[in-house]
Amino acid sequence: MMKGIGKMEQKIQHTSKKLQTYTKNTQTKRKRVKILWRDAISHAEWLSPSEAKLFKPAVNTTEGYLLEKNKHSTIVYMSYNDTDIGDCTTIPTENIKSFKFVR
Image (cartoon, rainbow, N blue to C red):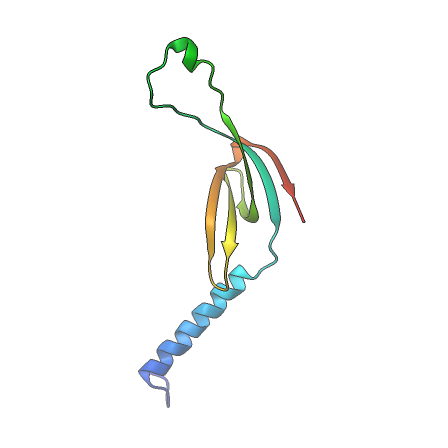
């Protein structure tokens, strides 16, 4: 225990440090992106083989803030506050058809 500081004060200091770290992590320069990407489509109903062959992968659009992009995945989040991010989407990078930064 630090001299002159009680256990409760130590917890508050630790929590405050943790909050400062989270805040720093979520208040970095946000890069807004728009991504077009291919996704699988599935159907649970009975189909003839000729009907099933008509289906094509879906092309989705995701707009948000880039958290990370590497050779395996691209992670985008749509909501944030002082400490956390929310509404995250992880897209396989190999499924991306188009990726652009937007203002």
